[in-house]
Image (cartoon, rainbow, N blue to C red):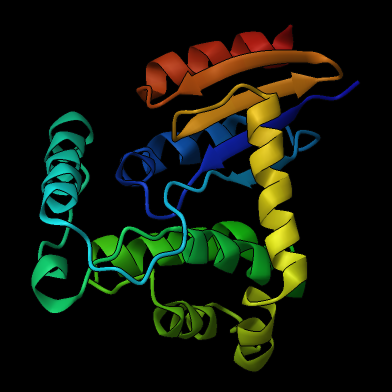
Length: 208
């Protein structure tokens, strides 16, 4: 039985942003027979409330820690230009809504949301930002359909199914990478790992 690789992450997780080069190395090393399945983690539920000061301080410290550990860059204008909310479910739904239009849009949409947030200082908690990102893909998504889908009960059900899958794998940290072969599960990354560590574990999991 061929294995499957699951990437459990959230587009608005700063450690997932720092993990991008490692993920790219993992995907490049995979045999063509091994699919990559994105599972949305869901860091923070829907909320229209402004982000509390203590949460701002927590997230900002995470940004500093990610930069120190991974070298990833952040656009700090976000905190000046936007009205932050602790709400990542919309960004997770956006990735799922993109998949309804084309399967290969999953990784592209995930990456585009990250760039909008961390490099362009745009707020992915806002549907308007997510719709604009959907229209910027190549080829662009149908934004009217995207706006319908992201609010649909079908996408919500898919989001919740992903949460259940994450729980069944015992994953609480983002990013996490898991290889499953039938009933067997091998954890490649839990929270973050450098490329050398991740690739060593991946080789054992795939070859084994």
